[in-house]
Amino acid sequence: MTNEEPPKRAPGLLGLPLDAFDAPPVVRVGTTLVRVAWIHMQEGRAVIELETDDMAVAAEQLVLDSVTAAKARAARSEAGQPART
Image (cartoon, rainbow, N blue to C red; front, side, top):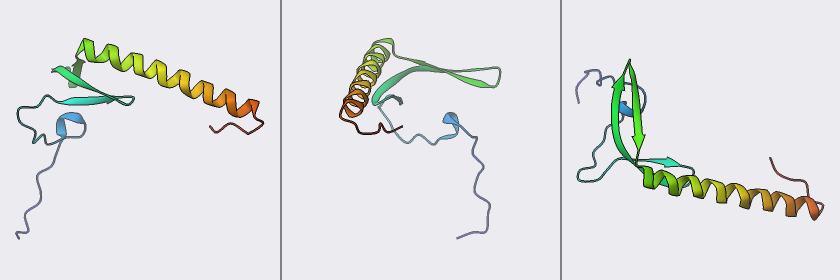
């Protein structure tokens, strides 16, 4: 072991070491993994564009999850149990 200082990493998504080869990077939207179409640096910020087909599926899943959660809260309140927040 050496006493050298480890290299400093940039904060955020672009500071993560990506050791995946031959696999597209993905992000999680709700419970769905969505492929990243491209990442572009603009004015010191990273702009991430997601695959539109994957994003449509993720948005639909978010709506279904929200409806399911609302039904569960309504069922608990009808049964007289306090709803969790």
